[in-house]
Image (cartoon, rainbow, N blue to C red; front, side, top):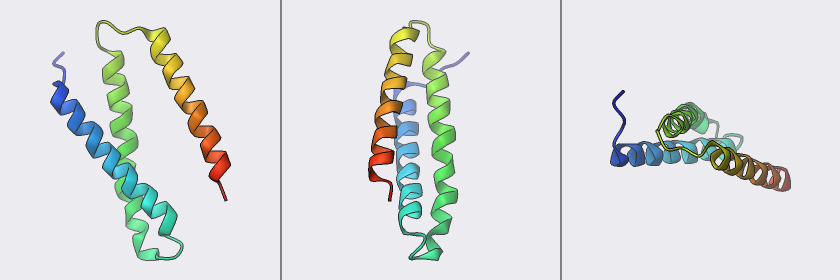
Amino acid sequence: MPYLTSSQTECLKWLALITMIIDHIGVAFSNAYPALSWCRVIGRFSYVAFGFIIALNLSRDKVNFKSYFTWMIATAFLSEISFYAFRA
């Protein structure tokens, strides 16, 4: 199975990050500016791209699953705390 090169993976990460930021702009300002609702559509790409990157990383040969999932759980926990702390 051909893998993406490191630079291709980084490019996909940056593209996903940019589309996620566009999505968050749409969430934050779509009530005041309904024309920004298209930002939500663009942002849907980020979920698919990040999921693909996670699957790609897990399919590599030398993966320590325990540390990978520990890292995933820790970041999920931290993001949930910040989500509930800043939720209006």
